[in-house]
Amino acid sequence: MPLHPLAQAFLDLPLVAEAKPLCSMSVEECRRTSAEMFSQGPPGEPVGSVEDLSIAGPAGDIPLRVYRPEGEGPFPLLVLFHGGGWVVGDLESQDVDSRAIANAAKCVVVSVDYCLAPEHKFPAPAEDAYRATCWVAENSLLLGGNGGPVAVAGMSAGGNLAAVVALMARDRGGPSIACQILNVPVTDYSFDTESYRENGEGYVLTRAEMEWFWQHYLSTPEDGAHPYASPLRAPDLSGLPAALVQTSEYDPLRDEGRAYAERLSAAGVPVSYTCYEGMLHMVQGPEALNETASYVKQAFAASEGESGCSS
Image (cartoon, rainbow, N blue to C red; front, side, top):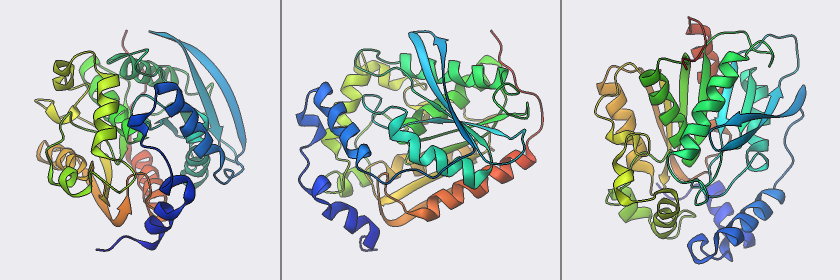
């Protein structure tokens, strides 16, 4: 279908229409530009409380930001990983969404400021994401959680990390994951899909930018074949937690997100898949958030078992 009016309005914003391609910038300039863009957005919703923490990670300290909804806990826990191609993004870039999810899903959201490439290449960001998820599960009651399985979620590269954490948790014996929310996720180190050919230029995220992000993330192209970089290449997807996979019609990542949903379903994993027609990468409107909140509530209600993490 044609571009959704919300998507077209986003593309017409001077900040977007006149922006330099990220792949033409240095890493430092790219991070500065990204931070400026997020700083010009609307403020996030008020929540019950916000707390900044820091935990020890494999590559150094991992900053966390904990968003608690209003009301009496304990609440379910959701661990959230920001987007940005593993190169840009931080707690501030995820602040608005973190607040909205905490309120709409009535859960504690723990946003993770994992280490970034190229200073910390694959698998360092994924290992940070896994370590943070283990810590959150182990400290559920301290955080205002209910001690049950945690959800993992993320957008774009954050969706990649959420999928990878679910794989790691299965492979390493914990923690228990209630569900995985994969919004416009990166699932494969490949650029030969129909959606890359259709949407690789002119719709916010470009093929050239994705190639730039991958080049900074991987030490060698061979690393891209590892399932913890490209979860679509995992030989076995059975035994993973239920998944909500959300893609956008005008997104070069559309087809790899759909392919991952199809492979999960074929492996016996309960999957809900939505492609938002007329929408862009990271521009989907309130319906996507509402779907996420509804899905998370249902997954938490259905989840059983204990959280924890094997060493």
